[in-house]
Length: 234
Image 1 (cartoon, rainbow, N blue to C red):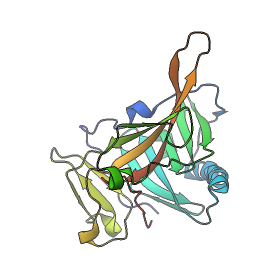
Image 2: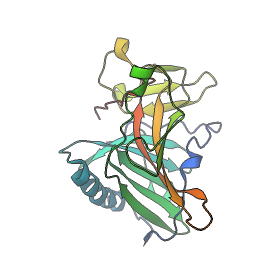
Image 3: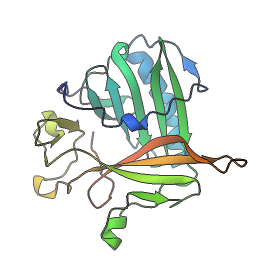
């Protein structure tokens, strides 16, 4: 199911440009001919992630970049719902993610690389602002060593459910907008802004030089201003 098409506004930056860690040792896939090829990859990735998450029929969030738009959606086998059409010919990168893991697909030359990362323990920092009244910029080793959790604020000064089929629209005063999956709540219960994308960074250490560096990262969840994960219905 595709809900409309996200406005390809030229002034929307690559909000998550920092999320690109290109590990060229990851498997090189061929070109994707159509959406059927893409869904075949998503089924395999979903099965692996949900086996670790012990989920049954739950949907994972999807974030894709095409040549002209940022596309949000949700996915479970046989249920791909996106805010705009994803044509593999114009796809640059895609992330399918949930609390326990992420599948990352990115274009390289005429084909794609891919990797799947699953954590032993999901992040334990959800809802921290409820108890402590602040949003930590980073949480070092919150649920396992050698990780740093970051809460990236999404642009958006107003939120409503005026999108097609009540998809959630996040507006910015300067004109940009993001179309997110339906939240299944009444207007009075819409989440507090800013919405935040939880990003988990992975660290490696060089024993000889003592240098610490980022080796990978993944998306974990979309949360409200109090760091509570949002629950989407599509």
